[in-house]
Structure formats: C-alpha cells, structure tokens
Length: 115
Image (cartoon, rainbow, N blue to C red):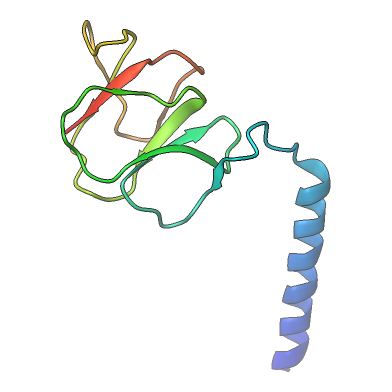
C-alpha cells in the first residue's frame, strides 16, 4: 500500500513543478540567489518572491544601503532585535521598524541599521 502512495505523491509533485514552471514569470535578476528555508541572518528579498537580493549575518548598528531591488526582509537568525529603515541615504530622519515580516514599495527605504 505504501508504494502507490509514494507514486501518487511523486506524480503530484511533478505536476506542481511543471505547472509552476509554466505559469511563474522569469526572474528579472538572473543572478539572484534562491530562497532557502530555513535561512540564516537578515535576508532581503525582491518582489519576485523566490529571489534573495541581500544578506547580513549579524547585527552591528552600522548604516547600510538597502539592496536596490529589496521589497521585504526577514530576520531568520542572528539575534536581530531591531531593523530600522530610513528614506535617506545616511540613516538620518525618522526610522521605520522593518524587523517583523514587513514589505514596502521598491525604493521606499534607502538605508537601514540592524541592532
């Protein structure tokens, strides 16, 4: 009884992969790294949901550029307590908290600090 269930599951997986391949658009940034689950550190993603566009391993409170194609981020590990996003090129002005599964329009945040 176990072999037919495995065959059915394999067939469904193959059908799903074929369907997704045929219906999902190609990534505009071919050099993007695919999603890993679970991942490590602070990871920036593009609006194309399976493309990693930036990473930071550990928090250091340094002002850094938000990757140009980033539209959301997720802190997988590393002890990130706060990720502040800024609309300025030098982390000045009012900050927005980005640490909790947060998304934004492309280009809204120019810099960030992670602590």
